[in-house]
Length: 349
Image (cartoon, rainbow, N blue to C red):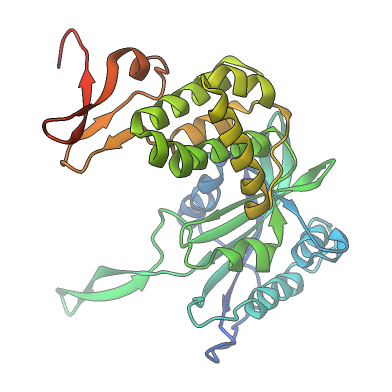
């Protein structure tokens, strides 16, 4: 994530990108934007705010040589003081246009900006931002004519969130230049992330934590819940979160020993892990550092509700791993021929 308090816009240009699938063409500007004060003060936070809370970063990728990645190359050129900003920005829009291989990909305004003094961790750096505005909103505009006020409908950009955007920092680690991306119109996830930017997650603690918790969440949904019920599923998820909270380093063997009570459940987990890695083309590390940022984000996605076919839901606290084992019992009523849950408590509110 970044901080934008001292950031400024050095250069900005606006083009329009078409869609070669339906024959709409690009429209290019030949000069950068000169903002008035009011527009600038609204534009700067509008463009950078989406990245303030983005925890996960990406790195440029290419199947043979990352130096052949188009956006990686163009961003490198834009960071140079003698770069032809206008000309390179047109190349970026042309590259975006070439990825529009479907009728559902929308045309829109493309803003390309060179930012200065963007804070990343404890230092300041330049950044290149590429933003695509796909949706415009109707609004009322009042105006004065012949001493009378009238009203008309116009279309414009809402100054709330960008549809698609990336921020490329002029700083690198061992895996390459640091890139952030947002996409609020995920009608085609391949188009922006893979086709246009061609970026991937780095091999770091954020990604390892995310991969492992996603594995656990899918295992609980596809194996534990159908075979052992919602109580077992929720109990496993709560123990998983608790284990990640209590350990700075996750060792998968230790994790299995502490989270599972039954040996056959461990075997089910190991079998599922192998198929999950193959199907999703990911590698779950046997040992990795826990990312608190990734843990917090993944925890929000974990649902510990037991939904019953009698229109009753039991919601368990994911931060209380022992609660379901101690205060929730599952049984079967021979007379009603139905399963039941028994819940113990002292007070209700």
